[in-house]
Figure 1 (cartoon, rainbow, N blue to C red):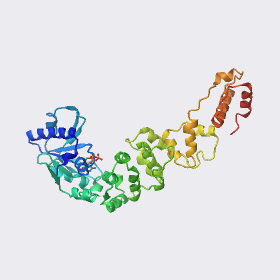
Figure 2: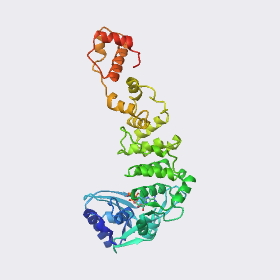
Figure 3: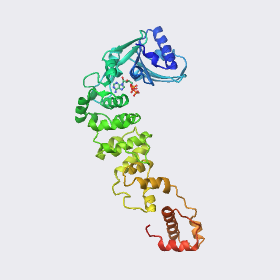
Figure 4: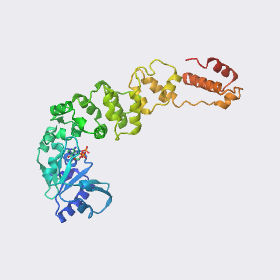
Length: 393
Ligand code: ATP
């Protein structure tokens, strides 16, 4: 089976240039992982990983048409960006050991067999030998692609690296494949395996899941596999204020769907996610949403309560159906309301005391926010303002 036919002309050109150097330098080279999987699925191949049996530096030093490259000596990995717009990671074949569950693995250079064994799922443990044009499938990955299954390769895989649970969910929702290890994942989740990894690693995987087209299915799987206790009715809840095209709104929706807000610490306490979003989530943990704004219909009061809120806080509050149209009204009608008059104009009417000037301006603003009217100021308005300044609408 030739997987190269599924790649673009530019990708094939670059792969061939790497292959030529490898043959000259007696290095074995294999396309591995997602590129092989996606080519077999007839899906668009984005990132290409090539595993090699010597230090990738030996290849990069002979490559032409490189735009930029980074070399990570600790992992013997080179990330190369070519002028043709193709990016390729060249990685030394390796064996991995986990000194403790949940820690990062120790790496020892090795051959392609060990390199495939270290991988997460059978569908990702496929290699395409560039010298002999043949597929290497040691764990039944091709069969699992045909049968639409996500299946781990080695025992204790999920305990060893709990991020694989999130990765399994990612592939399952992306390709609509079944989780072969479903029962094991549920059992691992109930044993608390996620406690062995940092919030950063979990937040990274969740953020990646949120970039998937079927992100809502991922959240539903979180609930079904007991990874998080979620209120499924709230997942992907739509209203005229929220726009789920933004990944941060999807993350916020997960935060909103947690039954116990203490679970949300993963989303709040990490260094991966957007700091404005995390700050908003912190604030929201302390708001009593049920009572917030529920009673008032005074636009000025609504304006006052919401004016310091971030767009994330507003989106979050809007999921409460009692608040949706108040938030909508604030965003589209109240937020940008500017008065034509200012303090100087009030003073022209002989009002000198700063407090009274402030009260009059507030009254005019209340009037404008609640009626939409702001006419040129006259003495009568001033009198009304002073008389009714503290009245509620
Ligand atoms: P995507 O299309 O989501 O980018 P990918 O397969 O290219 O999918 P990467 O995260 O780029 O995924 O990883 C590249 C390869 O490295 C995977 O195909 C898999 O074989 C291996 N891999 C990545 N993360 C792990 C992990 N936590 N445990 C084992 N193998 C992993």
